[in-house]
Structures are given as C-alpha cells and as structure tokens.
Image (cartoon, rainbow, N blue to C red; front, side):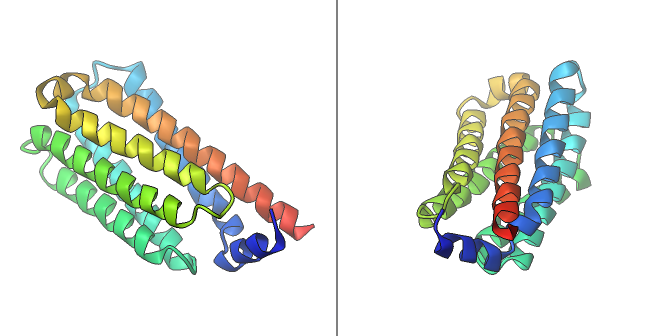
Amino acid sequence: MNNRNLQEIEEQGLPGRWSVLLSEGVLAIVFGIIILAWPGISLLLLVTLFGIYAIVDGISAIWLGITGKRSFLFMLVIGIIGVGAGLVVLAWPGPTLFALLVIMAVWAIGKGLVQIVSAVSRRQEENSWLVGVAGTLSLIFGVLLLAWPITGLLVLVMLTGLYLILFGITLAFMSIQLKHTGEARAR
C-alpha cells in the first residue's frame, strides 16, 4: 500500500470504524447460525429477525456514511434501504410473510448493486474487492429469491442463514483488514 492510499484511509477514518463492520459481521454470522441450526423456526420469527437485522444494517451503513468523508451517498442509500425494509417488515409481520420474500430480494439486490458500484468506483483502493464480493453475494441472493418465489418461501430459512454467514464472514474479514491498516499506519 502506498502512502497516498494510507493518507486517504486515515482521512476517511476507516481504520477507526473497523469495529462497526466487525459488529455487523458478527451479528450476521450469529443470525445465520441460529437460522441454520433450527430450520423449523417459524417464518414469523424469521420475519422479525430479518426486520431487526435490516434496521441494524441500515443504521450501521448510515453511521459509516456520516462518519466518513467519502462514500456518503452510497452508505446513505444502503442505510435507507435497510432501515426502510426493516421497518416495513416489523410494522406488518403477518401480512408481509410472502411480501418478505420480495422485500428481502429488493433489499439484497439494491444493496448489492450499490456495493458493486462502490467497489468499481474505488477499485484502485486496497481491499475494495471485498466490497464487491459482499455486493455480489447480496445481488445473487436477491436474484435467486425472485427467480423462484414459491420455492423461495420453502428454502428462505436456509438461504437466509447461508447468506448471513457468508456476508458476515466477508464483513468480519474486511474489518480485520481495516484494523491492521490502522495499526500499520500508527506505527
């Protein structure tokens, strides 16, 4: 990594925000494991878990956008999509059971597209590929849900669990990279 990239990272405050990404990643992994460990979980509980996760994810994205000097618009869009999806799901959990499939798909596709655009626009930065991986996972997840809506309801629990674990691992890895970048800069 060259000095220019380190200076940009320091100016953005990214190394100091690694813990927010790690927290989001761990939360995603925990939710994913819970869902996979108890596949018989009611879809109503899944609706509630998704609503909470989407709100936390959205707030996290908004916080990262507010505290950074770049990518504010990308993070704000991701945050609004997440908080909005979560609030809708929590406000009407019963009637939105089937709609959850569409809401989750739109949320994942929207988040994935924004992350991919962000990764491409920052492709010269180290580790920007991780944002692209996270975006690609989100995009694939959303497209699969829309492609097979009836089957999607039947496998929603398993897909959601797997998605959350993979996405959480990606975020955790990205946060560790940011932490090490900040520690290297501090030396």
